[in-house]
Amino acid sequence: MKRQTWMSADLNLLKAFSVLVAERSVVKAAKRLHLSESAMSRTLSRVRDAFGDPILIRAGRSLIPTPRALSLHPRVLDMLAMAQDILTRAELVDPASLTQTFTIRCNEGFATEFGAKLLDIVTTAAPGVHLRFAMQDEKDATALREDKADIEVGVLGKSGPEIRVQTLLRDRFVGVVAMSHPLAGHDPVSIDAYTRYPHVSVSRRGRRDGPIDALLSALGAKRRVATTVSSFPVALALAQGGSIVANVPFRQTASGRIGMHTFELPVQTEPVVVSMMWHPKVDPDPAHRWLRDCLLQTCAD
Image 1 (cartoon, helix red, strand yellow):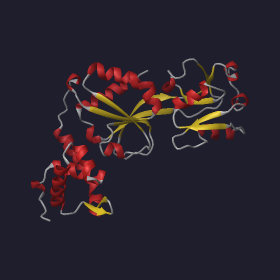
Image 2 (spheres, rainbow, N blue to C red):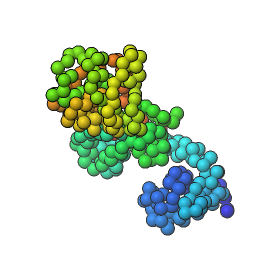
Image 3 (cartoon, rainbow, N blue to C red):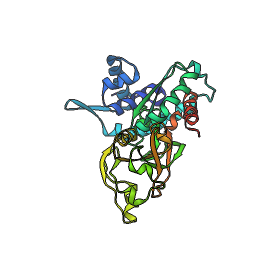
Image 4 (tube, rainbow, N blue to C red):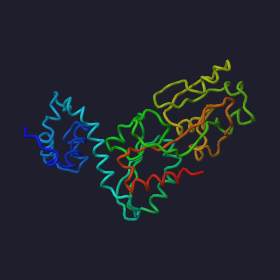
């Protein structure tokens, strides 16, 4: 392979390299870069020449990155972020002129409670913008690093050290039951009354126990978890239709709790801090800054 010097290479090759290594597929990389498959294949050849390495090699019916490609990938991502920072002018954006799609990774509860308000703010100022809400499966920085999401919203979990974080709202957990539930007549609700009825647990990983169970256990009490679901809207739907007790974040379920009885928990749970996260490579982008402002406005008290 004829290796290119740094001066003869260009940023487009670095971008192509990062996408090829991330996708491990010429077809998928072509779709992300809006190229034809033949053009992407030619680009892969140029990338191989530039790096003096095969980059992707055949493994059965799949392609896998070479060890050198894997070792260089994080450094190339950093270089692309630095280049964008240098080349992007810190200018004001005219939202009315925007025509792009923004992807926001969040849980179903956040999209249900705040999605309509955010959409109204965004489309009023920028009718050409398309918002895509992608549900979270895992909390990590991969989607932000690989341009699969513009912003991640949620409780801070596993994240890269470079990821930018800004608080959107602070929340607390409350109990919720149907208006016909016996607990609707209790004020306040005691631990004995609280643990007398079946509960729904919310866990994306299907876990039965959580912080509430640990707090009850410390007091010598235990609740009966009858079912586990993956989102707060589903938990509310179950509670609304029967004898189930749901435990949900107050602000993120305001509309879903209408017509139900809400009560303070008999145990003191930790406050919930919901943040938005983004990669530093989009930090100076005017359109991205505008989107972050829209989210802050959406979640303001």
